[in-house]
Image 1 (cartoon, rainbow, N blue to C red):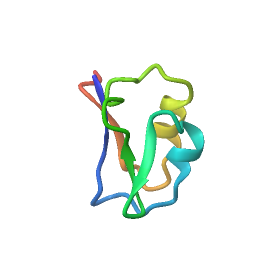
Image 2 (image 1 turned 90 degrees about the vertical axis):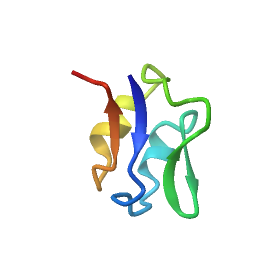
Image 3 (image 1 turned 60 degrees about the vertical axis):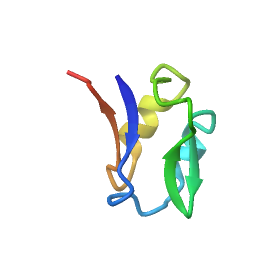
Image 4 (image 1 turned 45 degrees about the horizontal axis):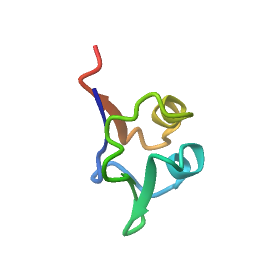
Amino acid sequence: MRISVDPEQCYGSGDCVHRAPSVFTQVDGLGAVIPGREHDIDAPRVREAVEGCPSAAISLVGED
């Protein structure tokens, strides 16, 4: 399972960066997963960032 941010859906609120700064960053104003952190689903507050994304742009790919 890996973390994915859909840049077409993200509107750049920055909530993901505030909730889980060790996993998310912003690139050109949009949320993005820090390279190499795509599989850090158990990092603190990642699931909170996924569930709390106001644009629902973050997903856990491969989740059942």
